[in-house]
Length: 143
Image (tube, rainbow, N blue to C red; front, side, top):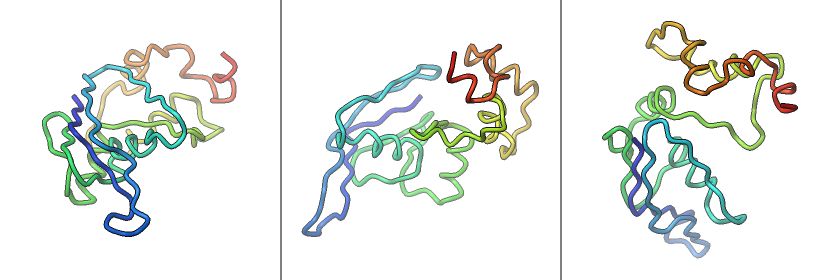
């Protein structure tokens, strides 16, 4: 489970051009729950996603994932969370065109130290993409 409580993110803190991108943001996301982050341009959507994905840090509040506080960790610890706990598809998709959707999603699994049996089947069951996972991204977009 992901839980954020009163997250605040400031860019250029204590400078004349300080900007508070997030102020007191809170939410809970349960395991297996799909969530959409929507809002106007400049509302802090990307900032929030970067914090959740351990790409950026926050100044105030608390972020826990599966009970672990995500703050002031080593880069190795952040990388482990990104590899084992968080998955994101960026706005530009950043997909490998020659790979199928399944192969693109499985790229991080190849870096995991955990050996996962039946990776393809587990991914397909978890996403409901038993048939579309074998298509290239360009064909999937046409579905």
